[in-house]
Length: 272
Image (cartoon, rainbow, N blue to C red; front, side, top):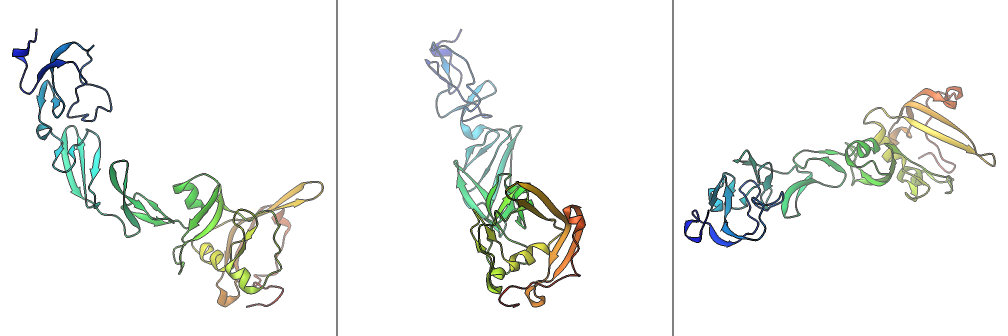
């Protein structure tokens, strides 16, 4: 039976309190000993249990001068995001760490990490352009809403689009589409309602990979609905009047639609 005179090294005779360990220095997974408040030899605050011994934190296997003790199975990144240290099976391993040129070192929840900038996705060390709504759905969020895209060769800042289930949307036809060339080039309307993204942006998006185009038609007052869908869609640059370079028919009412060759874009006012 322990007595005040027989307490092991670094332990103190005191009312039982929660003792922490080298593996769990913050007590996130409970205390080292379960006790009911009786007096006993206790490893006091400022020390940690390592096996059956009460030791100074610098005697723990995963002690670091900057981070103190790193819990087993976790890692820490320094304030400049230049070094990462991890603890596995009570063995400390540190290595160099750096953010992508498209990421920022951020501080959150008492930790630091690299985070990809807006319109990029990845782990912060490696970041990729958010090219389209499919990238949003696959890598950013499955929630419907407004997001920023940054096509691979887009020469300006990222731009906003409305995404739903991997598709880029135009809505209910409430905006007047009798517009001139510049409006159709740059886009118009409201992303939260009716809008046209802009032919220039559609060109840069559509040339990245194979895209589908779908048109849903709703006929009032019967609410009858049909859709037209093509499994390959791409338009050319403004220098060619945004010519429809690719449109392959696939399913829906689109199988009955025939376009005269590959038409160039025109407006009611001018052709560019």
